[in-house]
Image 1 (tube, rainbow, N blue to C red):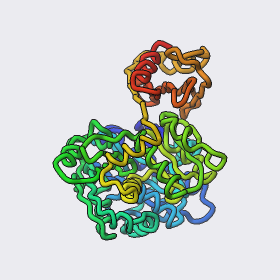
Image 2 (spheres, helix red, strand yellow; image 1 turned 90 degrees about the horizontal axis):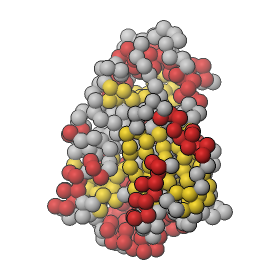
Image 3 (cartoon, rainbow, N blue to C red; image 1 turned 30 degrees about the vertical axis):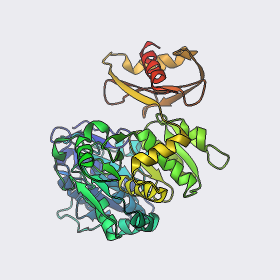
Image 4 (cartoon, rainbow, N blue to C red; image 1 turned 90 degrees about the vertical axis):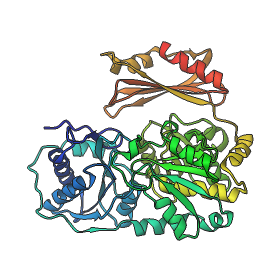
Length: 468
């Protein structure tokens, strides 16, 4: 039996070593048993897949197992972004959805994500319920693959109803999209072209190896986008990850715009210009400038555990204007309680188009003069100590009084999916000053995140972390 472990957003494993037809069928059978146990009426499940090796094969196998168990399947007939699958679940009133993807992991990985009826990730309780059914019953597989269909048109129509394309047309700004060989394909440019706007795409053709890059839209992976922007005449660049649920942004100069600043600008636009109602939810590694500028009786600001499902937990309970994480995943009440890199890219272009600025650099300069600049950094350290799982619980018990000379105002703790302290955030005296320490659940890594009043202060906070 293959070892199957569902983390914060599904199961990811090496192709042919851990994830292969037998293990995919086992997950599908457990998922089918869960659906049949929980669904009140005859259930429907939507299935999509990304560009990775064997993704389509795994999607068809999953569909055959669900059909074999008497569950109706809506199967995509082509590669689609994860948010398209999520929207299909909501639009077609499915009980759940399944996406075959390993998101931003290296190309030797594949995986499975579960989506609940609201379009967002399964809750921890739902995931555990599926895990408990693994290998509990014999796998039933139908002989034929269910009929497939194009899931894109309803998603595109929904996006068109939410984005101000008239302002984008009027501004006439050129945007360059980098799909990194992933599921985003040419979708951003296609939607813009359909609405009379222009855009160019690089690496829009699907590629199993993502053209030799890690499909994560962060600065270290976006040199091709930066070079193309530098050589061209664009207002900005955008990039989506392997399954297109995350967004990275570059200035027209080719320089990367940090996710922290991207989040700050999006929230500022949603609240100041679009006047979108509702709360702001962000993971614990996101800038405190959100709380400083936008907290009010009408706009609560929630600080949650790293992992978008913790944002979704609040989005399905109350109206949330924006939910965002430092890794580039952003969700919106007007759209889905789920990350969407395609929608976020179009909204970001709308933001710049209505601003009157001709370049993203100019807009960033103008808004930072009013909102302030984010001073933030993160370091990852290897930690292979056998007792590493006890390091943060022990640190939590110490009650640290200060960090790098700054008094600890409050200490927030976050629990792993197994109920163990795996994150501690020290909120320090003054505005936007904190240190977060997190232990990875799947790798021997400790991560340190810090925000301060200047870059030197951030370095001091990060240096103090390992000594606590």
